[in-house]
Structure formats: structure tokens, C-alpha cells
Image (cartoon, rainbow, N blue to C red; front, top):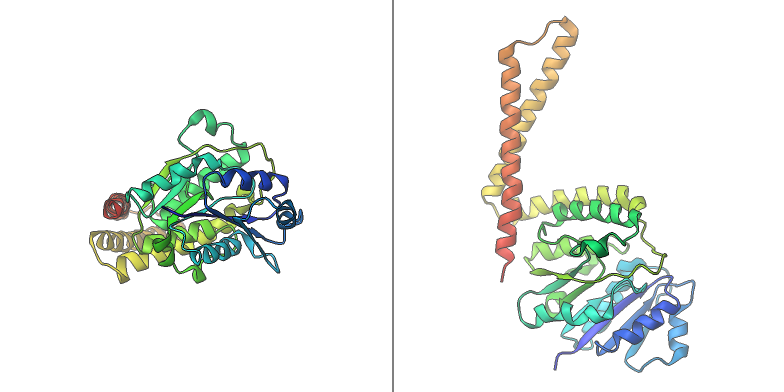
Length: 313
């Protein structure tokens, strides 16, 4: 029989987390709550409630963030020989009734991991608070590019399940301890071509509190995603492999650099001499720019289509 373990990192959880744990136990064999110095003393409340012997509580001595807490929970569950390990947030945004849906594709060997997707039902989507919606959509597209998982539309979603053997292959020591953990774990999965499947889930927004403010996190996420984009391209296209996409990206950079240099040169000369550049010179700039853009678009197409194909089981 498959043993399912769930880790719930908790900061500002409170009574709603107690209800979450109670409902999760209807679908999971063991739950580990990681109290991340919760001001509401959620871990203590769970312990005093004697909710179930299947619930284990880890108290962080200092606030480690959602990533650091999740990693502690993963490590504990891996020692308990769970076959499937799931991460859920403590605010009951995810429905425990979706746990079987998250596990089934893994059990059927269709994938190594599943990721919850809140963007499949428009009527339910518009119920998401507008600030969260705008921020999540922006971060989702950015994360697609930085991780290479173009087929996953809700990459920042905290509802994720792993085959335990797959989870052991991921180097968690290099993943972020804060909110960027969700993105960096996808990046680590991409380097090993781990198959992740979208699973349509419901989301609850009756709790107005969220530790993550998507709009506030856009700038730091932008910087971190740009760094991941550079790392992923170097790893996947010039160290671990060299393919058509590698050539297309290289040529797009070459033509783009030449177009940029010529463009700057024409702008400076025209301003100094007050003489417009000749049609022939401008044509060279335009042609180089078009070719550079075409090669870049070809690279994006290759990255989208080929990576998805390679990860199909």
C-alpha cells in the first residue's frame, strides 16, 4: 500500500491549520507540521489538541522561511519511507480533497511529480484577490522562462507532490529558504528532466492573510529569475548539452550585438554631424535586428517544444 506523507510549513497558521491537518488525515498516512516560529503558536496548539498520533510537529528554533521549513519536513518524511510526499500551505488555500488527484498521475507512472494549477477554471479564477491574481500571472510567466517548464502554468503554486525517489535526487542545499523556494525547486527538477504534470485544483480564499505579497515580491523575484535564466541556459545549452537551440541563441546574440553597436554608432554620428544616416546603413541595422530577433524566436520555440517533448514519459 502506498504511504503518503504531507509537510505543512506554518507561519501565521492558527486555528485554520488545525482544521487543515484534520482534513488532510482523511487522505494521508502521516503529516508533519513545521512551526516556523509562528506568532500564533500553531505547533503548540496542535500538540495540545492531541489531534492524531499520525501528526508530527517540528519546531524551528528561528524563522527559516517557507523553503527552509519545507526542506526540514521533506527530510523527516523521507526517513519514514513515504512513497509520495506532498507539500501544502498552512492557510487552507488548497483543498485536502485534491490530494488523490495529485497522487494518481504519480502512482500511474505518468510523471515524477505533480503541481497544482489554479488557472484552469475562469469562474473560480476571478474569485482570487486581484492583487494576488496580477502578481501570480506575472510571476508565472517569468518562472516558465527561468525553469524551462513552459507546460506548467501555475509554477508559484505551493501545492506540489513528489515520488520519494525523485525527491531524493534533488539537491535542496542550493534552493532558497524563502518564497523563491517554489521556483528554485522547479529549476533543480529541470536540470534532471524530472517530469512534472499539471493537476487542476480548487483554491480557497476565505483566509485573507498571506505571507507572500506577489506585488511586493515582483522585483526580488525578477532579479532572482534573471539569474536562474542565465544559469539554466548555460547548464542546459552549453554544459550539459549542445544542440540546435544552442546555435540559435548564440547567433541571435551575435546579430543582436552587431545591430546594437551599429545602432548606437548611427545615433552618435547623426547627433554630432546633424546628418541623417544613409538608407543603406540603416538597412544594415534593420536587417541585423530582424535576423537576431528571428533567431531568438526560434530559440524560444525550440526551448518550449523540445524540452516538453523530452520530458514526456
